[in-house]
Amino acid sequence: MKPLLALLVFALGPSLFAAPPNIILINIDDLGYADISPFGGKVPTPQLDRMAKEGIKLTSHYAAPVCSPSRAAMMTGCYPKRVLPIPGVLFPAAAVGLNPEEVTVAEVLKQSGYATACIGKWHLGDQPEFLPTAQGFDHYFGIPYSNDMGPASEGSKSNPDKPLPKNEKKVVVNTANAKKNGNDLTGLKGGDQPPLPLVDDHNVVERVKIAEHHTFTRRYTERAVKYITEHQKEPFFLYLPHNAVHFPHYPHQDYIGKSGGSLQNDWVMEVDWSVGRVLDTLRELKLDANTLVIFTSDNGGPLNQGANNQPLRGSKGSTLEGGMRVCTIAWWPGRVHGDTTTELITSHMDWLPTFAALAEAKLPEGRKIDGQDISPLLLAKKGAKAHDVLYYYHGFDLQAVRSGPWKLHLAKTELYNLETDIGEAKNAAAENPDQVARLKALAETMKADLGDKTKDFPGVRPLGQVAKPQPLISKDGTVREGFNAIAKTLP
Image 1 (spheres, rainbow, N blue to C red):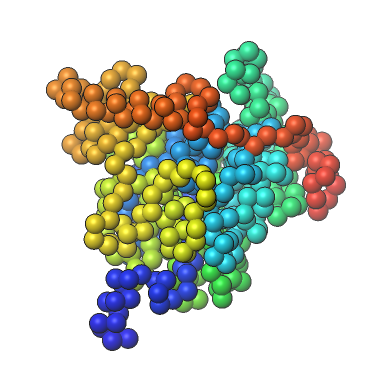
Image 2: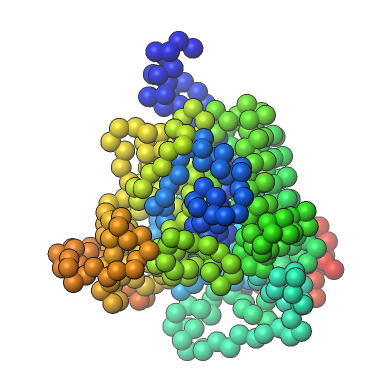
């Protein structure tokens, strides 16, 4: 290709000269901001080092404080409270989930002829009406919620280097408070949880016990490689949400002890291997020049389980930076400039509009989208923008707002300049009353839309709901009636 034409291709974008790009979204569970070496971690992650060297790091990229809301933002392009108004996360046999009326990123891309697959943890509802194959994905292989949502006796409540708990802990729910906040609809908790099911499309194929926990990262990776290979002749969207590195920590036996530290660090190293295997497959099939790969986490890391969020303050479950700012890398050789970094504000809400723009697909009509198309930012186009304002929700509660470098925690009027104080250590409210007033005004504007403290606000859309939710596998191993299964019972 002549140099002038090559520059024109780069400037105008892929759609004028090539097929729509393949898109792979790799989502790691509970990965801390500095759990990987491109973001300052001490655990060796050479494949991610190379990915960052060949791509762009998004250092002000935001998720939600916990799993289900974060995934709702990824799938719909909206603030989680808009589309999944629940107080926390979803559990097994939940009566509610992401409404099938919502338009997911998979459904958007299918308009442009994409094949779609979800391989890994879903966590947006485990009833058949809510699973990926009902939400725009042609294929699904994985578990429908977190790896700790199964029986203690089968390894779901403890790390493999610890003795199995002798008794299942029951969760006592305040019934009145639960009904008020919707907790009674979000599923079974603690010792009431059924066996953990592995789902392959419309079939429950496995009851996950200790041995199976160790295999998931490798099996998801093998499935991903197989999917890429089988769909190399057509545009595809692969959503790859790993169980790793969510507690309990179950790296493959080949990686146990490899980090010289914790099981969590061992699992980070296996994640790095998995990413390398996916990227190598793209190179081998000569798909790398037409494939955008995103690597990210669903929330900040839990400090009490060994995650590293430095230099951020806070942990998973909070609206401090350590709870919501996540390590994120975008890779697309020849399109994304290598060895670059952006500090502009981006979020999981941006993936749907960004992928739609790259695929030349239409956005959902009649539905508010909170995310922005950040493809100009990823492709280093002049004038690229990101979010001017970001709102930090935890469940129903609006807890903080950021605009530019300034972030205000509303409850105690704590103001931080994140450019000079990324660790949120010095409350600058007294010295900057104008910024406090400005951010409070922005918060009031958002409260008129999505509100605060409850879900009863005009911008909040209805949850999906079923009348009689059932576990996919009962405690005796019976697969639920009406759900296809390889076997009637799973030992």
